[in-house]
Amino acid sequence: MTLRWIALACAIAACLLLGLAAGEQWINPFAAGDGLEHMILWELRFPRLLTAFAVGGLLALAGAWFQVLLGNPLAEPYVLGVAGSASAGAVTGLMFMPESAWIMSAGAFIGAWIGIVAVMFFSHLGPNRMLLAGVVLAAFWSAVLALLLALLPEQGLFRAFSWMMGDLSHSDLPVPLLLLAWVIALICGLILSRSLDKLLLGERHAEALGVDVKRLRSRLLLLASAVTALAVTAAGTIGFVGLVIPHLMRLLFGSLHRAVLPASAIGGGLLLVLADSAARTIIAPAELPVGILTAIIGVPVFLFLLLRRR
Amino acid sequence: MSAIIKLADVTVTRGGKTLFSGLNCAMRAGEVTVVLGPNGAGKSSLLLALAGLISASGTIELHGKPLSAYHRMELTTQIAWQGDLPPTEFGLTVRQRLELAAGESGEDVESTAATMDIAALLQRPLGELSSGERQRTELSALMLRDTPLWLLDEPTAHLDLKHQIHCIQMLKSQRDKGRAIMTVLHDLQQAMAVADHLILIDSKGGAEYGAAHKLFESRKLTELFDAPLTQQGCALIPDYGDCK
Image 1 (cartoon, each protein chain N blue to C red):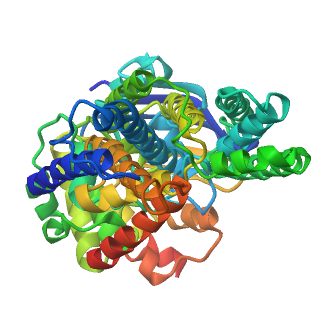
Image 2 (cartoon, chains in turn purple, brown):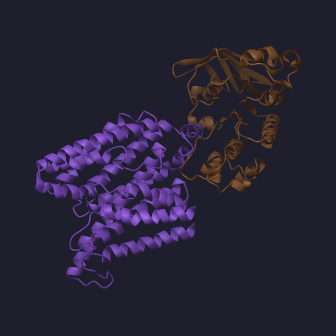
Image 3 (spheres, rainbow over the protein chains, first blue to last red):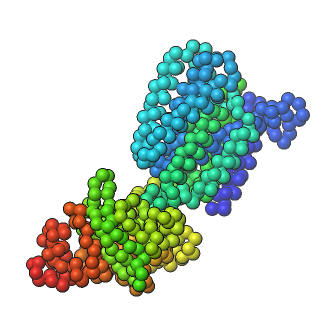
């Protein structure tokens, strides 16, 4: 187990270096001078790398929480329709203020919270019915989004699609805010970790071991939704990280949340840093949507570990 | 000796249907109370109500104080409940499950696992266990809970004969150590072997409590289960000859 944590620490260092070095122009972080290379490294790539790390970590944390909350290993941060409502909000903003740089983030944030409030109405139902309500709400938001995209002027379509597939190039949220959210979310997760472990045994057994399941579920739903809203606002909808990273970390570090949550917060961050580095390098100077890369990098790694475990 | 838990005029309702009403009983240290009745009569619901996991009308007092006045964490130091563990998909191992049950009690997970023959399974995920292995894990988890009152929902279900016997012996030894135990059983021989008191819950909403030697009689049990008692079921019943 200690070896795995050491390996994770090495992976952090390697990914951060790669994230700094990779791009249209490869730059050695240890040999950058004071001029243009220094500016590219520390004013462009470093903040973007930190944004990617924080967003990836938040998505993975939210995924781990939703999986336990809903008792379903297929759950991910967008399962209850928050991504759909955030996207609808972002596109609505784009429709009315196409010139504004921050309007998609603002629209996404408002849209995400409308989605969260809608889900909250169903939070008193059991996990299965809440999941069903969330899936139906997601379908509703998808329909709204399709309608908005049909009405969106042609010049806004590329920006909308790019955002919807994950876009770290236009994040409007300050990096310190995202990093602070990452730290707070992780601390909250660790405080709840023992109760989350007990919830893995089912609601009844968790209650019998002293967990106030109703209160825990409300807190988890709010926490996971808020974290998802923040991540979507910062970088659009980036799939895969929230679904697979928690499972990957369970394979590597076991099921207890005092290990799964920190490992997911770090692992999700690293995956997004790697994916973003690849996204802005492969067809440079153009960029690929980062959501495509998260799946292309993450799926083979996950499947390999899954097969090896068997 | 004063009662650990006392029920007065207890009615349990689930999904709008009254399962049984008017149950009065008291459990003391070192006594085993066996709950008998047909499927769906409300036996498991009674245990859930006593564990504070569902609500019931009437009065339930734990150490003379209403059950509802206890904080959930406080209840975990007084009552341990064992029920079917739902399937879990997240790779939790047997050891981790037992450690969750042991909590801060400091009870020894490995020696408890050894007593239920699951020491070799400690690293296995719960999802990979057979029903019997899972049941033994749950019984081990219960044994790690050093509470005055145990509530067991069909503890011998899924167990092979050796482990059924082991389970019944374990209940007896815990009773002898002063534990108050209420258990749902379907096997009348096992019930006869451990019961000091019986609670009979019928499918018409009636519930009766009394000493085992008074309630264990073939006519009552034939009526309760609405079935003729077979030799397997009656072998240990004192008036077995009457029901042949």
